[in-house]
Length: 271
Image 1 (cartoon, one colour):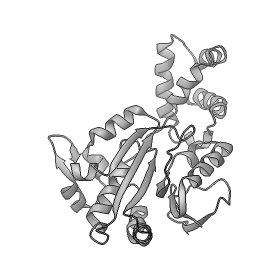
Image 2: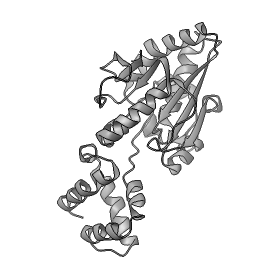
Image 3: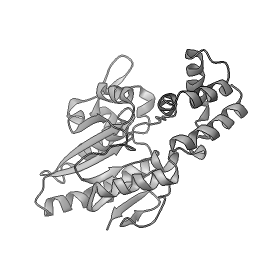
């Protein structure tokens, strides 16, 4: 598949499923490979053939949408964000939870991929903050649209390369080493619940003190879908709760009662 052909095809099809081309520029070749395999499975020769197929087989759009799911993750991604969570956000939220007479700090990790983000949060809490807040438990709901990613997360086994950004002592305390992989220890798995869910179509019923929604809607979704997603996220937040988006991502609109906690780190708070 030539790059120019792939670009033309993605610029045609992405808006039809609520996605935007700029978000896919750097990862487009990953999508090309998936589309090429799909063409071969359908015995189609070119993207023009596939475009015609989409126009006559509307059910194929669901398949194409799934070919555009991007999972890029690693433990402790964006070190400064996790440092800000440890230093400012989580202690503040834990104190507020305690002041309200509650004992559970509820978090939601959206687009959790293979579980690296929620497990990083679990490690951070148990190894660095739990002793300061012994009466507060951290519970994490981790969701992703891809059931294969969720299955991998539940297995909790990782290649050494995905742990390279973790503090060395966390790696030693949080994982058991197998022949070729690292498996996160049960006590760090225990606070995390994994669920297959599409943020565009559904959301949990409960509210959360902390929501991490990084490098998903505000990178790949079109503006109307970004606004709908942001509205949904705010509805899941308690007053004073925090929302973390990707570094460099911008919210699609002001309002919804969110104020910056640290724009540099992509952290906002519901006023």
